[in-house]
Image (cartoon, rainbow, N blue to C red; front, side, top):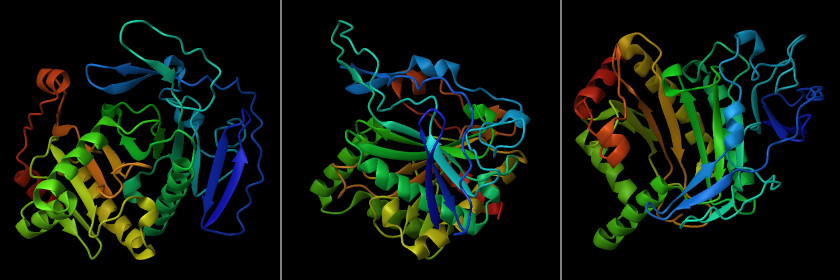
Length: 358
């Protein structure tokens, strides 16, 4: 892999990840861009014990532009984009409209009440999986998936070393139903200045399980699912894809590495190579369920930078809000107000439907 670092016209970093060592990455961003926005505010919710980012500048972010004006396509005459090169393999760059950043030029004043206010220090990056605007992750070659994983591991390494960063989260939103703003195949990376609520809850559960049983929660979940078999969708030597027994979403699949690892940096070459064929197979099964492109969120759960690393277990959570051909799962009263999920699809039936797509 060849890694090339350059900067965009407003000073943001951009990283090319290429399979070929002779790739020319000398193209320069010639756009006239406005100054970068200041970092967001973080406001503390004392009732929920959570931090909320207030990022008003994101209201102006690019929203579903015509395909010939896509900012994630390679630059061509008449359309200078976020990617100056005329072609590329995988590209990562700082988000122009970030939820977190190190540009501490704003004012972060007391807003009264019991809420503490501080700068939204951190970083947000965009990951373009391919220069092909009309492709999807499910159609990437195993070699391309391997390159994406290398890029995510590289960024996890760099972002974890930045001051104030406590957790690195790599994810993909796909589909208009999910609320994407750009249809080009891409993901994002958030470097949070705190450990997220979901991760805190998972690690607390793992700590209680260890204290109660002496075992590792995630290892035992994986072993139990492999033994039960009924919810396993697909598996190979290094990975297992299964529908969790208490799935929250109509179609939800977790992909576990068959050994414990903390984050993407710890994957071996063999494990990366084995991931692509299995994961893209699961994605194609999802698309085959109802004969439409399934909207989904794909979320890598990695260990925090400094806490709970011995408790965490690298895995991917993939889920769709589509519950039938013409029906979506909306987060209504119970889910949105109480955080109490009600799933309309039996997990064992979801797993069977996905297996049948093979």
